[in-house]
Amino acid sequence: MGKISKGEKCALCNDVAVRSISTAEVSRYFNVRLETRRRVYLCKKHYKEYKKRSEEERELERLRW
Image (tube, rainbow, N blue to C red; front, side):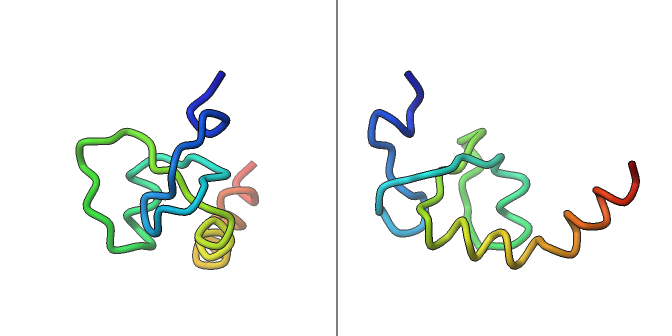
């Protein structure tokens, strides 16, 4: 059973988290200081915002294959 199913909260707004992403990945797009954690948990709203902000970089990564 993972942390999300146990009710982990979003690192940015304290809503219920739906996804976890590495801290290094999230810190590129949000001003978050969470150096002590390896994973950042995001709610639905912030995960959607993360996807929009990182869309171009993720597309370039897919094209490398």
